[in-house]
Image 1: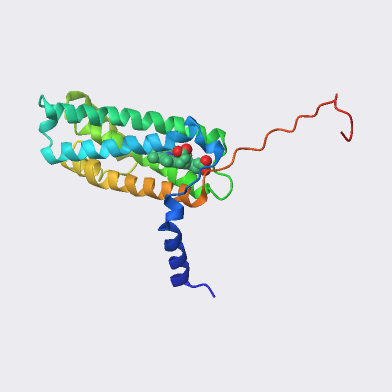
Image 2: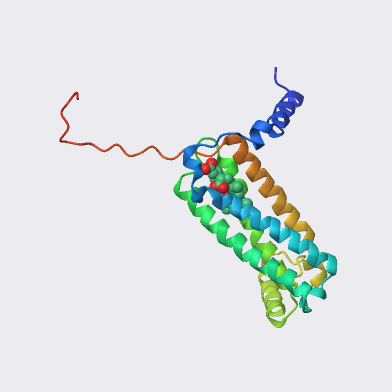
Length: 207
Ligand code: HEM
């Protein structure tokens, strides 16, 4: 009789297995570039986090300076562009291959949630730039959030936005991306749709 302990043991055993994370073969259909887009999104996210750690360690004033700090800020900026670019292409690939099929709806939902959380993560990063554009965006978006009853999210408050951008949102996003990729590894990559049956009228019956 299954209980919580044995169900958790089984789930953990599957999650921690080398067969899950290091399979020795890959299905032929998953070897094309279209199937690399998720990994490219994840790789951009790693660059994003690493450059973000450098920026956070040096502190908010640092990224307006010249030299190495500007370089870290530029790497962070271009990693965001790559992250969203590859994520959109990946979203098209999974949409057109119907990748939610075969018990993969949680994979889809975790991906969609990651997309939703990525938006405020990027936006709060923009807000802590502190230039006139970001201040303008902060006060405009504050009106919108007030109207939604979310007044505790105080966008012109640089301290709150800093905490959201470097801790709350990226940790949430990392957990969602981990869950998403773990689901992909557990389920394997979805097989393509079956090829359409084409009727040929020239072939003789029974041959
Ligand atoms: C946060 C950004 C995301 C990352 C880092 C990511 C990462 C990945 C990776 C590495 C794979 C393995 C296969 C591949 O690379 O094509 C994958 C598969 C998948 N992703 Fe994402 N993904 C993200 C966003 C999304 C979004 C927005 C959706 C849809 C709403 C989505 C839905 C799926 C589905 C359904 C699969 C399974 C594909 C299959 O079995 O063929 N992902 N993802």
